[in-house]
Amino acid sequence: MNLKQLAANRALEAVQNGMVIGLGTGSTTAFFTDLLGESLKSGKLAEIQVVPTSQDTERRATNWGIPMTTLFEHPHLALAVDGADEVDPQLNMIKGLGKAALREKIVESHTDHFIVIVDESKLVSQLGRGPLPVEITQYEAKTHIRWLASLGCRAELWCDEGGTPFITDNGNYLVRCWFENGIADAYALDRTLNDQPGVVGHGLFLGMAEQIIVAGADGIRVIQRP
Image 1 (spheres, one colour):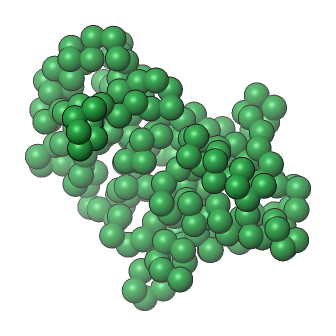
Image 2 (image 1 turned 180 degrees about the vertical axis):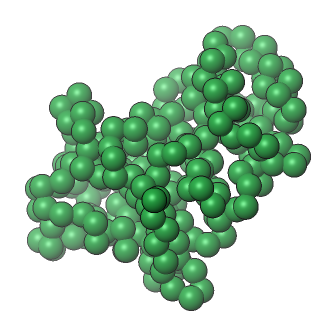
């Protein structure tokens, strides 16, 4: 197994029969979905349902025959499992480079047991080593991007190689924001983004993770929120 698979395999140990699980998006969570599907197919686990956080995750779960449900039917999830792009020493995170941060945050806010699986390269001393994804409305997109740039970052519409903007599963645009010296105050930035009309989501996940499973060259370690 590679490091992502090792972390996903450890997270699978938290899954018990009959659970309803929030299922994240991205390359690391894809390994978890495959392991979950294999366990259901072999009979090691049973009566599991998942709430997917993206159309990609839904397709992958469907291919395994994993039963799906909704937050409306199950407003309190037994568990949520997802990856992260950056994790700081306080277990705050940047997520969303898989283009699904808004749905991830919606789903993962409905559980007290949010497990994050990463390889050791995702650990940072300060958030903002890479870009922060921000989801904005298509309406007046240039205005939102200009406002984001006023926060002291380089803000660019996220486009494919041909210059076509990516559109989220929610029908919105994505902006990547680079902070040259990292994000000085993630909580202040979180409040600022949340209060701005036209910004519908962003990749700051603060105070949400209960447990981080880190796979590295020396094996697995688990960081637990006090």
